[in-house]
Length: 165
Length: 331
Image (cartoon, rainbow over all chains, first blue to last red; front, top):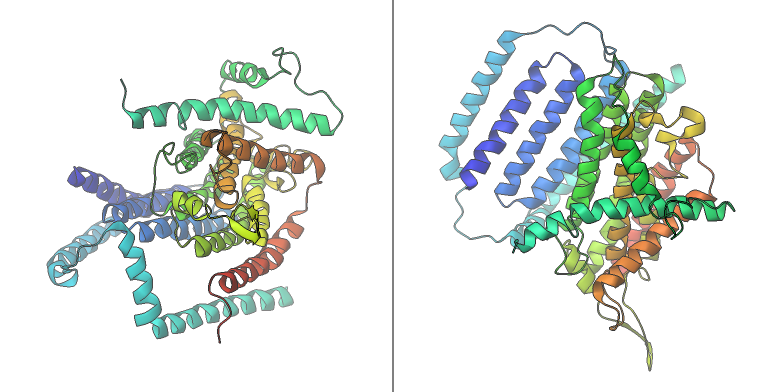
């Protein structure tokens, strides 16, 4: 039964990604990207990583896809305008890269994800926060500094553009 | 005999009860607003103060012609309000009405609820864009601004509850509120989080009202400015879905508020647990409806400034206060 669910969600993910690249209307492309992210989130749920799945939905669909849609709405072509160019080679290259990545991941997986400790749905969050806040606390602080720098940079850009306009 | 899960999904707290409760909420909304404004409100549709008015409206909407504008994007025009309605009903499935009466008891119930709420600005933007008309598009963009701005204080104000309860499971959050607080000999007050989390509860209430797009935050569908905004072009049945979606969210958010801050199904014994949940939901939703009848609409720049500065700052302050309450001051 999980196999059927896995193949269903994997198919949704891959089809959403292909549609996101190849759809002629940018809005449909952005929504397909959202569907693809939803498939990825479902795969996380299947793997009992509910925390990552929930935040996949909140961050990637709730923020990233919405920002893309926002940009498309503000600067993209109006509805009824001609479609963007259909690039067939991009599709083949995309499928090729996906297959290579998939094969590479499958070869690497027995060594990459070997874990002997059984994990209940409750422990993944506790372990996750443990490793994040104890083992990798310095890296987390550095990462948050990077984000803070990005936010300050974006604010500066917005301010200076408003000043010149 | 049908299975209990099927009964829960199909009857209560699932689809049938959601439909009936939404119709009753629409009636409550109209009746309370009318009473505040010294009008009568729905009156004739039943002996009981027009309580059947929404059902009559539902039948009327169902028989209207499904008129789709010629240059509209037909797929999203139809799909967006229907998906918004379904998504709103899905939120109710996460709510524990009592420990037995819950459809899906997720370990991460609270973030799952809030994550599904983040999907709604996308649907509303698509609904506004697909109509290919100016007012719906302005409404959709306003919804995008407003909901994304208020999601962040919504999540941050809910973190206070998670810190106090030590769990993100909604049943666990209610059970963590079971222990009463000892004030002085012979007097206890219920350990509901509305008291230690007063600031968080206020922030959650305000941001949830903004997420529901109800007056005073109903900019995406402001009638005098942009004539119902993103719902402007919708015909009969689709308009019913779009309007129903906002009432489903009113129901779901009232239920979530009573679970997070008002102790869910807990209350003195003779009244059954389910009735306590119902009473709390009705009180919270009536408060939200009273806001609609009392306050004027805010401007979009006021709304965004308040969201990104005051509410965000207060949400961080609430986290600091909660930290001091849970851990205590440490040097």
